[in-house]
Length: 483
View 1 (cartoon, rainbow, N blue to C red):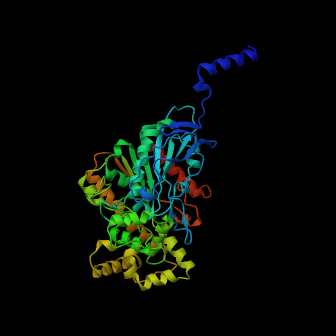
View 2 (cartoon, rainbow, N blue to C red):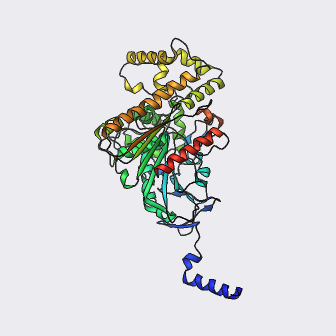
């Protein structure tokens, strides 16, 4: 057959099957129109796709509204996602990100042997205060995966969780963002080759607690098949806030709103303010150093809230058994508090031992904020007694020093992670009707999880240390088994 004849045959095929002939994997049609992604070599990426209207102006401090706009031109999905506006723990006095940040980023493998893929929806950590999807590397996981990964951005800090404890300013906007993103995935992921009936929801730290919260809210089985919480549950003491009304009006006072008015008036005032000033108000809640690192987060909403996300304390919701019960994997690392311990010692070293000296002098006063138990006791005598018992349990008669890393690590690990996660396990065993799994990860390294202080915060991407490569492979094996 001549080259001319082949050309004619190919032209005929193009006329008969134009969709096949001209199919472009970078172009995807969704409900809002057509978008264009990027070829990354081993996979395709479609980033910064809006799932909600920008939460700015009158939509600030409100539940998210679905993104309904229709694109008249091809949407550019090649731009890297933005941080949601935040006061960064890792930048000296730094405020980074944008308020208009409610997007999802989709990563699809190149695999001609499959016509569709299971889906991992990922919620990043950061104590509900900081972090972003770009910090959690997907490059290596996508180069070896057979599933689609979707990373979810959600509002953080006061913009995501400020609450006056009533129906006018209920809070939990960040958790509501996550649920709307999951609904977006359910409705649109098939356009990317994903299986909407086969979605795994995974989160790390605050993301792990978010996965738990999404179950407690109910209805998760409509959008998710299985759930994975890494290093976080809703029972962790940093994962639920108290004194939310007092904090909300303190923010109003800092920004010169009328704090003698109603919470509705407070909300309207804050909607008119510079969002960077709202986020910047976080520094006024710091007791010492960087403590508490989680000033704003999920709250129990008033019962009369319109479409509340959570109206019971997480422990009570678990005891009731009235929540979404889908297969769930929960985990923690044996040295979970290593990051907190290393960060505290690093900050103290930068300040010339000042933090350690202050902690030794004012332990009874500062420990309840450092370890998030101030709201659990009604009087100062009980707080002081408990604080002294804790210090003796982990240090005996010694004071804190630069040699206290392992003591601090055990204390942070037990109180902030291991004990509440164990409590979660106990309650889950007594109430769950679906499969439930748990594992403890042991990282045999001198650094523990203190490698965060190197500036690398990615969970899935850490090629510069052999131990981290082994850790990444472990995460991948877990992910494959869950999907």
